[in-house]
Image 1 (spheres, rainbow, N blue to C red):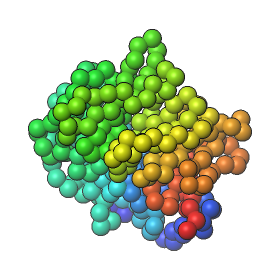
Image 2 (cartoon, rainbow, N blue to C red):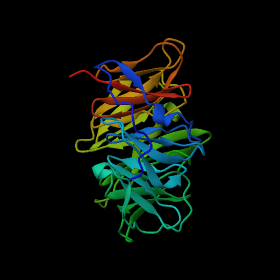
Image 3 (cartoon, one colour):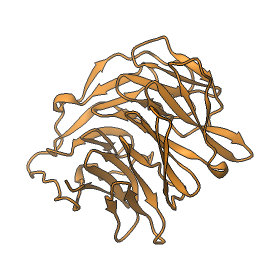
Image 4 (tube, helix red, strand yellow):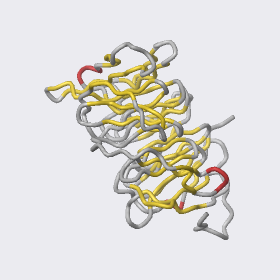
Length: 290
């Protein structure tokens, strides 16, 4: 473990109160970061690449063994499939390479997704899903829109499909079945930003944020003025998203947690009671009530 901060004690904000995360003051080149990997806020150093993690409970800061452009995150895990691959564990307060994941030699059109044990990848014409250390993967034909990572809810995977004529759709595939991939949402021609957590998946449509239970197929829609910036964030079936109802950017969550005020509250990331977001170049952590 490489400790970066020492001295000042870390204090979580009271429920509903946000506190700044000073150790993540550098802006990331990929504005989808900083983001939560379980109780760790993973963000960037001066290079703009993802290279450090802050424990939101203790304030301990560790350097990752590598700097990453756009890694996949899961609770306590940072995963990057490019090159020789890297799977970094943050368990126990250290950033260590837990094991050597399978090497991915195909060119990817978007960042990967992981739940720590499994991963999902997008190439120009396929979606692939399997274990992070298993060279055998299942795949299905796809035409991903690019840039948008897939969403993983094992054994389900969802992705943003290029529907043609500038339209996007969300497709899903249960990789454990023999059924083909199928349309989950057309969203008025512009469904995008898929995310996954546990057995749930979520995405953004033109006028709503949607959460789907992969066990039942049921979809819950939350009316929203979402805009086109950051993806929503999902923790189990709780979803948070950017809203533009007040003219600027605020954050709303389906369980009532919110972040608003002066400036634009952007790029939400949720895990349990914690909500991480950015106002300008300052990163904030808000704690939900009991």
